[in-house]
Image (cartoon, rainbow over all chains, first blue to last red; front, side, top):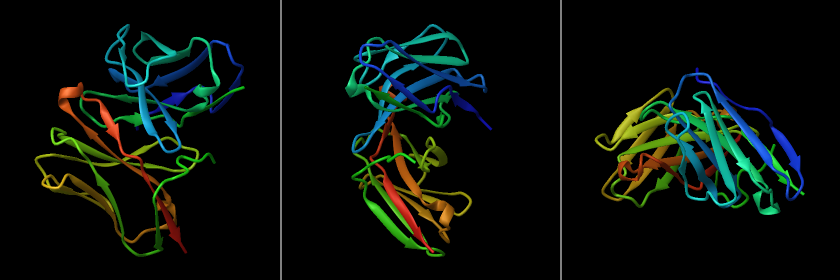
Length: 111
Length: 113
């Protein structure tokens, strides 16, 4: 089975802090994704990556950046956290056109 | 567990009955559809998928039906069990949009014993 691991289940940070969310997959998948999930808004794509050192903006990239230095790891960075970035963050990976596999999410609270 | 969606439509079903969850999509160019299940405190879990050249696909206790004429997707769960209680999402893929997935808002299924 594919394993997508997000490093933190719950995280509390302060406004203005730089925040790193880490995601690792163990199936050598080329494609990795970061979503946020909010009540009433569903899953929205922030950034994705098709290969190492490659990144593409999703639908809501403002206030975020990403890093893919190794194939198995995809990091989401909040440059200067704000309260409207309080959310559930979900990482996913996929090989080719196969279904995406998700991690269990990081519940991030910005105070 | 956290709330996935405060305003989700909810389907209440008696244990042992069949469940039908519906999803309407708007993009006629979508060529691939997926159903996910999300339990409280967990990430979405893949259930079943279907390509646009098919109108029905069956898995273990689940069936997905695709009606391209009216852009409608449904998930049928046979003999619903307490472990089926979760939020169910459909997702569609448009090949012209870089194979990105677009997710529906989700339906909460509550199984009554």
